[in-house]
Length: 344
Ligand code: SF4
Image (tube, rainbow, N blue to C red; front, top):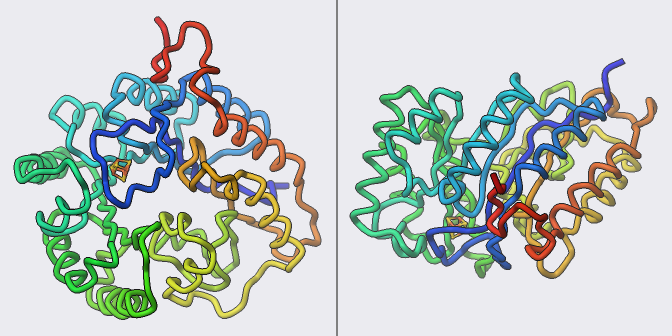
């Protein structure tokens, strides 16, 4: 019998280091750590042992291109260890160049580039970007598309940018991105008026530019029913996974697109998922949703809770991830530098 829960996608935050200092940065407590290849190997072997086969890995940071030797090794390892899984890379794109693009193309890595709209908006919030770097980014974006790489955009919207939200989106929609994943800035002060305008403008955009909007992964919300451990609210499709960083109350308020009128999981199962989610350290002071490894699961064939779910496996998995996420730089092993490079 197939497992009751499948891992749908896994984020690997390869490094906390970054060449930008965005004003809305999701990392509240950057410690400049990087994952080690050994940890990722251990994680993949753990998944294998438990019979889990994630469909997708997303490498993120920090800026994964800043630790390119490590990121390359991780990609090469994933290609060998889980050849059927898709690999995505989230980046601010400033360190992209032709050799990196060629490597990503060879390894069929999809890109997600962070860009917030017109140059003035982008440079106001993504501290460290300049007109020159913006031009470089657009050039690299075109190179990626010429190379046949799929490139999506991660657009973060700050409440102060609400008057320009539509313009910024329309600007991005003209660039050769496949999809645009719109996320409200997580730790900004959103007042009621700001949230209302966001919803109105987002609904307008979603209607006019449906093909351009990345509205979560619809496959995870199949009509047969599926639920994600990342706890998307009942019956709603969120604009993107980065919504996970919002406090629960705010997340509910931003949910926009009703997908299914009824929750399909029984409350006991949902309560267990919530409990696991909280154990994963979300409530710890110094952690944000951008832990080292974040996994997202869906329940594929046990919507009623009758079949029984092997919670033990998931508890072990969460414990494994929590241990990694709590890892202190001082705990790095011999032969491995603090920035996560593996000693040769
Ligand atoms: S690019 Fe990402 S990790 Fe870097 S400062 Fe900006 S939000 Fe933070």
